[in-house]
Image (tube, rainbow, N blue to C red; front, side, top):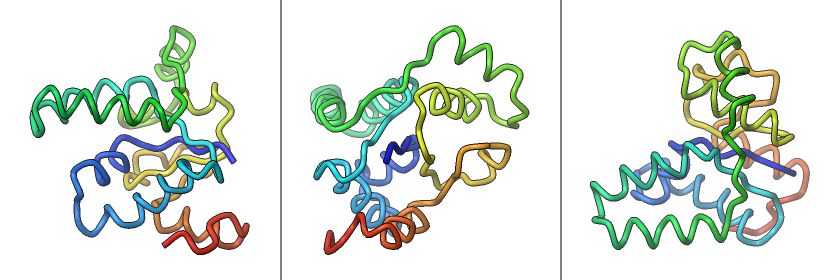
Length: 145
């Protein structure tokens, strides 16, 4: 199953934001184990690098990005993604870009804590806890705690 991870979910893990880090970490473990295919939008990588540098410094931020690149595939942000994002009825342009990157990459779901930002999505959108529940029903997670 191909899942696009929104920026906030990745930052929850990287910055150990309680109480959000635990379910997000479980989802990332599923990517690491190969049980699901995780994607990040190209803009997510640049945003995370920028924010992580401010919090952790450039060396740790670079290491974090290197780790993410080993774990996740990247959903391209190109001209057609941007053009499609300009016409979709999302209230936030960044969310529209991530949605269109996900759509172009053929993902089956988006995981985010910003469900309102993706309410116009034609792709199923879940918060991390809901996504874990879907995987439990599909028998994907198993004893990953």
